[in-house]
Amino acid sequence: MTLTETLLAFAYLITGVLFIIGLKFLSSPAHARTGNTLAAVGMLIGVVATGFDTHIITWPLIVIGAVIGAPIGYFGAMRVKMTAMPQMVALFNGAGGGAAALVSCGEFLRILSGDQSSDASTLVPIILSTIIGSISFAGSLVAFAKLQELMTGRPITYAGQQIVNGLIALTIVGLSVALVLGYLTPPVFGGLVAAALILGVLAVLPIGGADMPVVISLLNSFTGVAVAITGFVLNNTVLIISGTLVGASGTLLTMLMAKAMNRSIGNVLFGAFGAAPASAGGAASAGKQTSVRTASIEDVATMCAYARSVVIAPGYGMAVAQAQHAVRELSANLEKRGVDVQFAIHPVAGRMPGHMNVLLAEANVPYSQLHEMDEINPQFEHCDVALVIGANDVTNPAARNVPSSPIYGMPILDVDKAKAVIVFKRSMATGFAGIDNPLFENPKTSMLFGDAKDTVTKLAQAVNTV
Image (cartoon, rainbow, N blue to C red; front, side):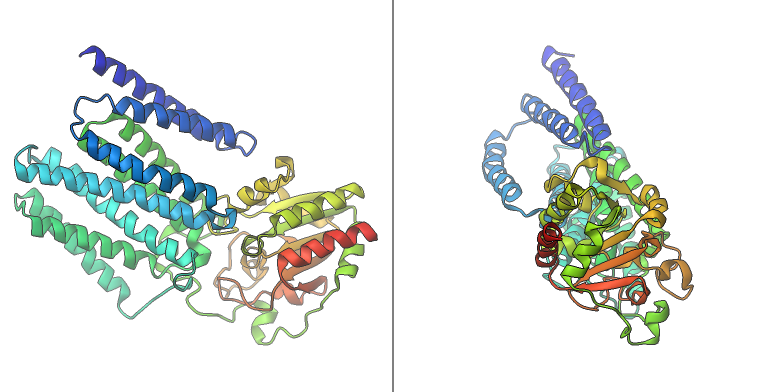
């Protein structure tokens, strides 16, 4: 082992350690920024170290790629709004899966040219990385299009959908076996890539916007697995370490979020949840949702100003309205009056894991005020006012008491147990799950209609005049 190889291995070890520590720090909002910085430093060390790898023979292409990619990544990250972070995560995740697939395609071309061995130990990782990376790439692009509203966010289904997906999966298996058996031709490999891309698209089409946090996390784990397998293809330690970390953490996060919705991952992928508006919502399902009470900003301001405790439950509606700073202003004004203000965070509120945490952190809401569902639910019984800002399905009591509801059994925020509930909504439209919410007809609930940012801003100002 030469000195260069020893130093390279040591640099990769440091990179791996920084990745692990950074991932550990990301488990707490208070240390998340430090964790992100440590992981970034690790990535920098890994990239610089790889530059000294003696196997690199195409420096001009690497420089061209860096010159093109770096500005796109930098300006994209600087210009993206926090409310658009889910689709950016989906897009970047797709880029990672696509990169892994392209590397494997390049290695297959080396096999055809005779520069790479064609034994099973080489072919199998190439095939697996190509399949998984292509599925992640195509699926992430569909997720991006749904989140960016370039296409409908509701599930897209058609007759025989699962049969079609199954046939495509069998095609992928057949083409993979053909390659391993020695049919190493561009048409066979190209067919494998095309089939994996099509499967990635078709697998995400029937998944609705309400399930996007789980899908993004699952596709993220796919990308990690593809990158790890690519590490074996290239015999690159840092790719194996980083890919394994991403794959494992993404898988665990996917399982935790599915558990938070009391649904299996299979149900998320194949259940077409929210395909069409349903009418399983308790009292609301009977029809009309006309017995709702509305409130004025002045009434809500008085109610909140004289409360002892207020719990705010944010959701995707807050993100769409970009109301997080107004919510922070309202919280601060209530605290000046001695009101105890806390935030209730549902695991799948928003369109990506931790979406609400990110938005509220951007608005400088103290981490100590953010409480996960299991921690905050027991406090609702002692809460004077619960403010539901754009959170529909995760506060729907039908999940507890309507067995026919599509979300029955899903853990929710128990806002209906508060002494008074104020729901901020643009209209009486259903959420992404497509079902009515009996919370709106609860005698303790009052509706405050309008744009969340505008309404919360006026409410924050009204609190000061009470």
